[in-house]
Image (cartoon, rainbow, N blue to C red; front, side, top):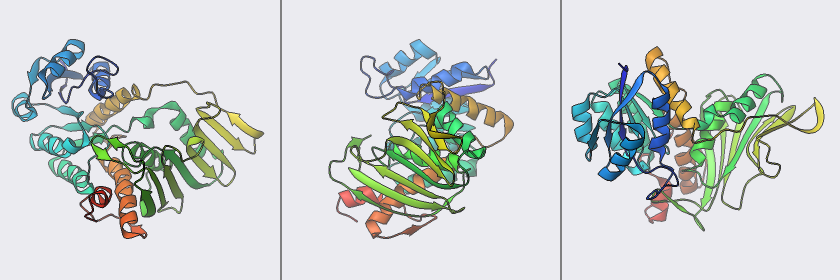
Length: 345
């Protein structure tokens, strides 16, 4: 018999199948539970019961619910995956914690407001519920190798971390999280930034900035810089700048997953890195949260770590609203970006 009973909230449709409106992240969560001998998916909840039935055909799950509250009340679940849009995350995560669920694994971004994100972490800590968010890139080989090179002294002492992506909220949450990962989870002390609302996209029903800039400092003196916008940014997704060299991750022009410039050889040196599917890496996050639950340790994708990345998102928005530097910890409840868009800032 499996040790952990698993429930899924928000089944969706698999990526690139009929009726799919997104990446079908619940199916990638399921891949991790299926690979764990300790887990069994026993119950599914979706407001569209046909989605739950389609999920059941692929991954199992004996009982189906249209109301996740009913599932939480009846099923005595150990682990719950929340795979819905961000505006639903807080109420679902908190309901699972209140129901006595031992671990909740939630999709990113955390929530539409900083107050909701903070409350999820606070409630789960108070209830003794392990909380994690799917920043799965921490498990991918190019990022892990970049961190190994840094730790081995390949570029000397770290000076600055840089990243670029389309927006702060949806994609930026991954990059802020990765910058903390490279820098050994050291907290940030302040952030200063600006956003421009022209040409912004809409993601998960929320309006994004068209361009943005976030500059911040970690407590160890390392600086971070994230540039957003579809026509802005660097050739590399991530860049680690040290006193003696540079590591670039996902270099767009060359196609290199990882390349290094340092004193060992003239010019750039491309590292041989196996290609990996970033969605499939979700399964590694699930396996880690299960192991953490068994061992009583903090999971790699913990809610505490996710909140630090989220603090920089909303801290950058708040800096734009204040037109000045924001010292951390951040003490706001709303989303300054959405307030500025609605004219309430």
